[in-house]
Length: 164
Image (cartoon, rainbow, N blue to C red; front, side):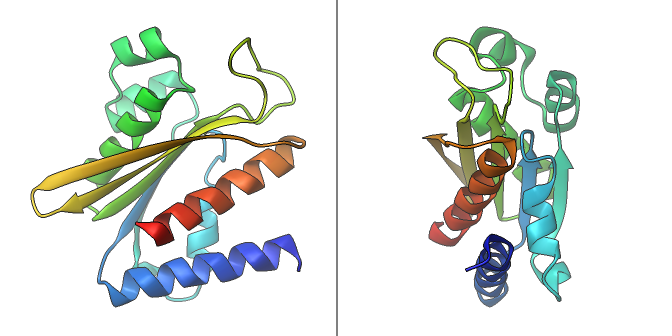
């Protein structure tokens, strides 16, 4: 199956589920540069389930737009569980949505460092349950070129929205 068509079908499933559960989603993206939000908003009627998307490629944007603490970025680095969690929580709070997904990673071809090679991606999902927010995170290592890493990240982010 064409990978674009597969992403479109997955995004449509996410949208249908969000609509049926009367929830809105927000995205916070670094390495995917808005691709998750694009996949969701490519589906007709997406205004019924997408609230807001944040592209926070730089550390400054992560701090200013999503409220990621400078101390966390300095201690853990932008590609870390702590930053992904803070991005997801920040997107949820700033957008006022019921669910948010965040991604931060190294898509390549350069940028890899010891312990964080190209293809390293942290994903996080924040879900509002009443007054509480539950955040989960997942480390993935994707193979392939920049396009493949980014596409696989989008797919994993959308699948995670369905699971939550």
